[in-house]
Length: 404
Ligand code: C5P
Image 1: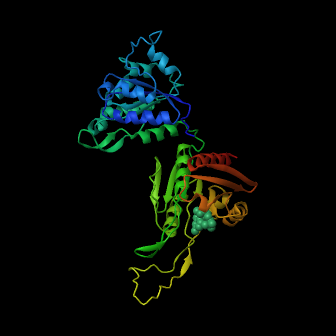
Image 2: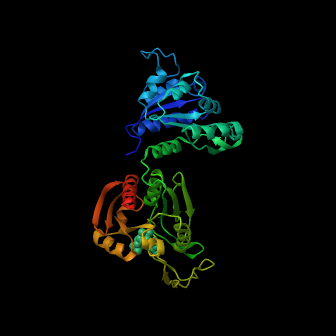
Image 3: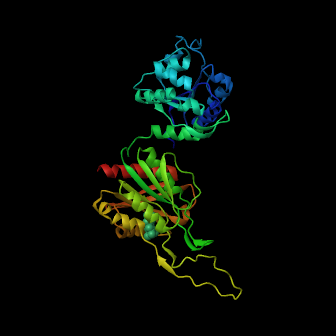
């Protein structure tokens, strides 16, 4: 379940063409179980109608500080008092400037100024032309707003409605949703650095063929996302997979086990936790041909021989920092049967404090899974759930082990 479920968010729209994304954001928030109260500036109404936002939020929209629906005629006070957060998206250059100066000449800025500053966080998603964004005045405003405790989201980069290209686009609705989920996630891994491997490896036979496996990378990517949401700095070393990078995660793409090992060794020094979810190929062809191996019509098949790949997890777990526990190492075991027995044996063989077992054929490529956490004391089951939900539980579990 999303960390946003049950929250009450006031969604403010100031004037900007990015307001069309706010409709999608509103819908996504409602779908995540949020009650959304929309407040719009007069400028926002030039881009998006209150009717649209009312239909999507399921609540009447407020556009004026003189709204007579409020018995005390104090919409700016009433609306902000029970909110878990105010999210202004889009936040125009003018609106940021107004926030900075404590301007309050219409309902949205008035409500932001009147909010209980310690109880109701203010999150803004800037949206403007690239010149407006890079202008020292805007940059100064953003720096000061951050210093004032306002959460200013990043801007996107790319084509702008004006025809120019650069920084200043409002984040997409799914990116804002991700940022909001992260905002409400307890920061159990704050100040920690987490290194994750994910996906399969690909071991080349020749330039067009190779051996790989059915790992989709979904579990590892979910873990990287959950760690980042929990406040960690996350580095993800990914084998060949078709998955978008989780927001805020530093990703290195690799192909073979040896490339994965190199990347992991480079990153491991800075890490506090290493989670090896990758399904690393056990063997690689002894020789990878420079040119495509041709079928010559004789019916003869090529002779392939294999050598064992380096064990990345064992290498790191048995390094100085791994063995001393300074780097907390977590292994995965994809088994087809006798999970507890195999996972227990694998934990000892790899030399890791925590080994997470799952049934490989049942989970490869799927969006859900079930995990068995095996440590020196025994085993704990994380019952069948989405990989995202399991990743959150696993990260919470790992965080608690770091503080013990
Ligand atoms: O030995 P096995 O592949 O069953 O062990 C699985 C665990 O070891 C996983 O955590 C996997 O990422 C890791 N591993 C590794 N390097 C290998 C083989 C497995 O890091 N060469």
